Image (cartoon, rainbow, N blue to C red):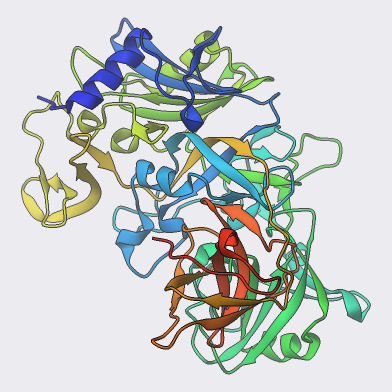
Length: 551
């Protein structure tokens, strides 16, 4: 029997009955819409209790509203980590870390994410390998390449609020390159993005790989500051800030990339790169066997993209045959005006049995009036979060309440372990964790998607580059503007009083950006560069600012 805390019971009953309106994003009361309950202008949700029985949770984003968008989620904010536990995270945890964080919607750095709805995303490579198994684009950053020549690539969301389900694609190696603009367009190709560097390779690293490249001291690395996130087309301009030879593990600030070369490409990269020069970086994705005049997925200005499992509905035609394999499901669907997130609970007799691929395709087509749909990772991973609260019943998705003999246990860390074969207790996999506050098991997954209400940029421009900031209290220095970025160090004023830090120039005009309740500046301290929050209410001299503690 599932045990729910009273607050969760009240919240779920309110949703099911639609008699009590939950809090909308930003704290205002939601309003009943013509389709469902409005969470924010342009984002609604609705629960369908079907007679099978099935309980289907659906959120809907109106693509005609320019102030809402779809964002990607990444476990611990990175594509890969040396610690496997850091490459999987609950949807709720990823969602909460993204609330109020920096975005790039509207092709401008500085917009903030008011997180509204979140769902789980795609698979990992294997049962014991937590590496993300497909491509990923987040806030305009192309952080992991989609698999070459894969029959089903993923869902693509663009800056103009159009979307598509990309199919077979490839990366033309001649179009993955850095161009040295001050040298008559001399260029050099790179091999991949955010993967371990191999022999005789040049790999491009972004902040989503981690705080540093984690490379050995056997190559060359060039640090480039960008004017915008590095995605697919159009090409992105930047400025070379550092050239490091025979030294690896270069730190990657949030608005920089690192070109890391080993072996044959080293001499060419070092010979072409000069500090202060401009470069242009391009990544181009093309349809497999593309023939001019045929349908082609346009990846220009892609804002978010994620891998999908099966393309179940295409141009109003169901793509899968009728079957009886029913389970919890997560899917994404779309039509001309809307994008839908769909989560179906399952494995709970008398409440929700789950759906097959055919059934969810029919639901998307006939009930939601979607034209296209694809499944994501389902089963125990199926999760929907609204305004920080898990909406669906995830425990039975894990334990299969129709099979009381299912063997599930938690280890000493609270992580859920599923025994794959009860006869072989050594075969197990970390899958999720028990949540005390909602009294449910929650899946830990590599990535996900969010529906977001976009807040406009706010800047404070009183402190130009070169200003001296006097620090009188311990203050974090982070990789980027916001508490979601890793802490580089702590600025310590010391025992005798204040310690000065210097406000630095940026290539993207980001100084003074308002994130997580504070204005942030790029500063230098103790030989390190990073971002720190400035308490402008205490500024009493033109060239002095005071940095507060952020916890």
